[in-house]
Amino acid sequence: MHAMDVLGDPVRRRILELLADGELASGAVVEHIHEEFGISQPGVSQHLRVLRENGLASVRAEGTRRLYSVDAEGLREVDAWIGRFRQFWEQRLDALGTEIARGKRERRRSPTPDPTPDPTPEDS
Image (cartoon, rainbow, N blue to C red; front, side, top):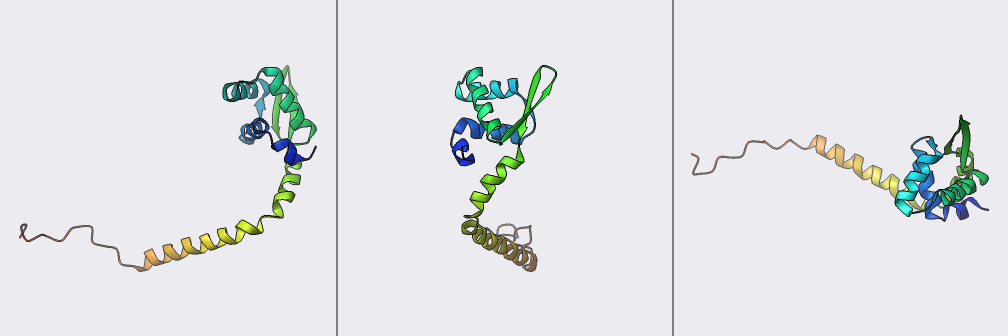
């Protein structure tokens, strides 16, 4: 199965988002996914298996617990596919960075307005 097919499922994408924050025990993954999607433990285990078999997640045993984490190697295929389209937004991000820098320079050059208001005729 192609990595993009695996990531086409919103549950598997959410699992990877959870794992991106750090290693999680399978029970914690089940708890999050059940709360958000209403999926049972066997269903979540199936999604974890698909992620693992397609190289997007890895698992290690710690006693009786199974700890899952993102497998960066599997995400390289996704990055390579997306890389073909990166040109479409990189130029815009570069232009945005230029405009932000220009605005910062202009703010440094312009005099700072006096924070005290001018007295009104009634104040004099």
